[in-house]
Every structure is written in structure tokens, then in C-alpha cells.
Length: 215
Ligand SMILES: O=P(O)(O)OC[C@H]1O[C@H](OP(=O)(O)OP(=O)(O)O)[C@H](O)[C@@H]1O
Ligand SMILES: Nc1ncnc2[nH]cnc12
Image (cartoon, rainbow, N blue to C red; front, side):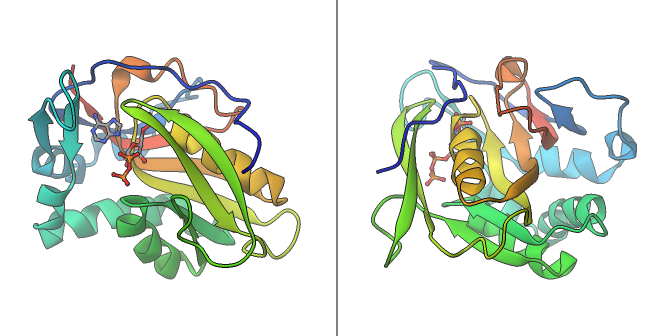
């Protein structure tokens, strides 16, 4: 098992409700609102996310992307928005976080010509792995990456997940990748929980979200 993440995560009891469009960096000072903030595709993405109260436990407002996945046009819009942002940025690898980062990550990786690295939950990857434990909104968990996934020092990596709440999961992903010698360029999520956006401490790495869950 690897060392614990040094960047702080926030412990939570409740989250936001319905999503609203954003298209911006959170968790550090954004220089200016990006063009995507006005993009009409964001409203469709926001509308397609179902919010389920008290799942998986009391007090959690669960942002469910499976309703978005049932609408191929909207699903494609989400992937396209990321592709438009990261194409041409010299990204070598897209690292997707199990499970919901696997839904968006591979499509983005293929479209920008990058390799895809699965960051998996414990005991799923064969062979030698490195691990990072982290704290979640509703428990604790651990991420693992195959040793050798980063093939040379300084590879430029984009981390993808569906949602950032406390930032604990992204933090663990960043730590894993940096331990392997990667240069983490940015983290990107479909949804951000605004309640926690000023609390992320992701080793200075920016987090880009398409929509915010409404509080
Ligand atoms: O910002 P954080 O507080 O770390 O929370 C965000 C993480 O929580 C969810 O995954 P979850 O751990 O529920 O796993 P799953 O995708 O396997 O359901 C979500 O998909 C993120 O990975
Ligand atoms: N509120 C939430 N909805 C969906 N996934 C989550 N992961 C952590 N918090 C979450």
C-alpha cells in the first residue's frame, strides 16, 4: 500500500442538488471565465444529470450521470467539450478514475491522440502496482496504478472523473501519477460540488468542471 495523500481532502455529510452549467476551473483563482462558460451545450449536460437524494446514504445528494449517458447527443457534447479544451495541449496520457472516469476518459484519450491509463480500485490490476488511500464523501477508498503506465519522466497527463466533491479522489490520482514521474497538467470532471470548490488542495493542480451541482 502506498503512503497516504499529503493533499487535504474535506470530510462531508451532504452535497448539492441539481446541476447548473459552468465550464470553468475551480479550486484556484481562474484568470477569466473561459469561452465554454457561455456554451449552450452546458445547459443540456446540466439538465441530463439526475440528482438522487439520500444515496448511497442519508444526506448525500447523488449526482447520477447514467441519465446523461442515455442521451448520446448530450454524452457526445460532454466529451467534445473536453476534447476541444485539451486537443493541442501536448497531453500524452489521459488517466481515468474507476469507475465513472472510465466512461469519459477513453473517448477523450482517443480523440486527442493520447494513451489511456486506468486508475483502479484495490486488487483489480495484476502485477506490480502503486497505491494511494484517500477519504471520500461517504467513506474511504484506495486507487492503484500499474507500474510502467508512465513510460518516461515528465509525461503530460490529464486526470478525468465524472465528479469532484472533496477532491480526495483527484488528490490520490495526482499523487499516484506524480510518484511515477508524470506531469499532471489538469484534472477535469463533468460535475463539481460548489460547496467544496474553495477547499480543494490538489498540490496546486487546477480542476476544470463543466457543470456545478446546485446547492
Ligand atoms: O471528490 P471526492 O470526494 O473524492 O469524490 C469524488 C469521487 O466519488 C465518486 O466515486 P466513488 O468513490 O463513489 O466510486 P465509483 O465511481 O466506483 O462509484 C466519483 O465518481 C469520484 O470518483
Ligand atoms: N454527491 C455525489 N454524487 C455522485 N458521486 C459522488 N461522489 C462523491 N460525492 C458524490
